[in-house]
Length: 295
Image (spheres, rainbow, N blue to C red):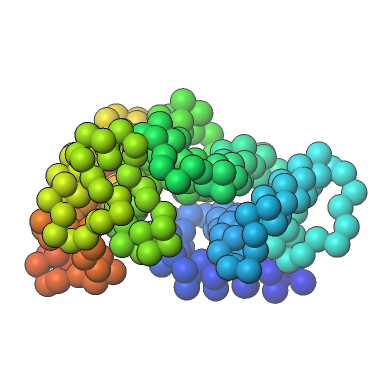
């Protein structure tokens, strides 16, 4: 059964997150590859379960409490029964390397569940502080997976610094990229402060809104500043593999910002596709980030 779960975890990682899979296969030791695939498989299941339209908000919160309790029981060495295959991933992580698994719990699992609880309790209009905190939890969770499987002994201050800057910036860029999709679900990821500052009519947002473009231009600048402020943490990482993984992580989301600029800050554009020019831009961004942050 363990081999089957590991195989499914690996296949899911390869299908759902190709960049992370390629980095894991080429930069991470085999034992830690398993750790990365298992934790991603569990997180993917949490995400997919909460995306089910038939679950009410109360049911989703109950599900998160149940999973948090299952995790706590596994790590406190309590007798655990009737674990499903996704919960078994946590048990297998602990068997692989209990030290790394405990750090995964603290810096990845706990933060990721908190992010979902945070989102489920969100008001219709959020504050800037709310958005930054949410981005910290989500972005930091995924950044910390990469750090821990490459070097579990990285200083906690560096990890937290990356979570507050580069990782948060990546999630804020992700929110901008997915603006069009989120707005269809009545989810507005513009802070109360920015709605007032840029005089945005949230009931009439479209690609012709100059107010929305002005906000987007400002937000892109703020996110870029967060990326720049986090470079000192990347440069202080203890080895080239970690720096390379971090540089590629940064370039992925700086490319998102470059596409938004290239399309005149139009959040209603389809950012799932790239033009030829944008593909050339992407190569340049990767080269620039790797040469600046790694060597």
